[in-house]
Length: 377
View 1 (cartoon, one colour):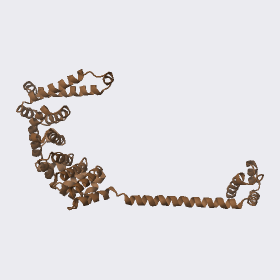
View 2: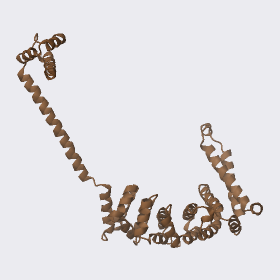
View 3: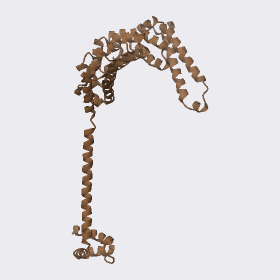
């Protein structure tokens, strides 16, 4: 009975719109008829219906449904086509690895492939899939190419894949234990681009993973960093980056009493090169160097650190660095800014930064001075 009521309601709506004049019922009449005698109302509706119009409505509905189905099918086919045309990240990485493995291809093609890998390896998931595609072996091979550009690009890609990614770091040294030595050798070559990228990749591989650090130490890593920090021919940027890597290793080596004798020895040897860097570094780098020096003092026997600093007149050198930074802060403070700039925080933050830096240098200079040493010791 409910179905009949629904059908009648639909027929009534149809006649209200399409029925001949005078034939349509109003809403009250239709409702009364459905209550009193629904079968009679149904017969009345059929007798007065326009069968052609009903057939057309049914056909339109059928065609509309078929059209919707065709549209959905077209969309599915288009998506399937596009998915086949655009390779996945894994497929792209595999293609790049094949290029690197092809010895007949030129340098530019290989560097283009390495640049593509640099982009893809920023994803940790991609980096962890990369070894499954032969990526470890391909990168290691590129690091030993004769062309400087290829080696530099390969080291950069390796550094991106290894950055904050312990799984990849462990996989890399498990499959190629000599990779650390290969990267250390890169910093001994003439081209400075190799120094920078080699140290970048080495730092990314070594940081935060104990197993990799143990291998690094076993392969002469501490002595390597000491030599690099002390080598002024490499330039301040490389020296500071090597110093920062040492500082990270020192911070990760545990409490003061747990640090190895080799780490203590290297810490003492790093003091004078660090102080000398302070004397010629720009303001932005002084802050980085100070963090390293403070870390060395905190993690080691203070007497040994101060005695080491005495060999390079650390108190005097740091004192001159303090005077320079303090003078810069004074100049910045006395500059005539327009009203809008004075109202902002830009110059205030700059002055505050220099003031804080100057205060740290003053304290360090006092610590390395004779009176400061006497008070501390």
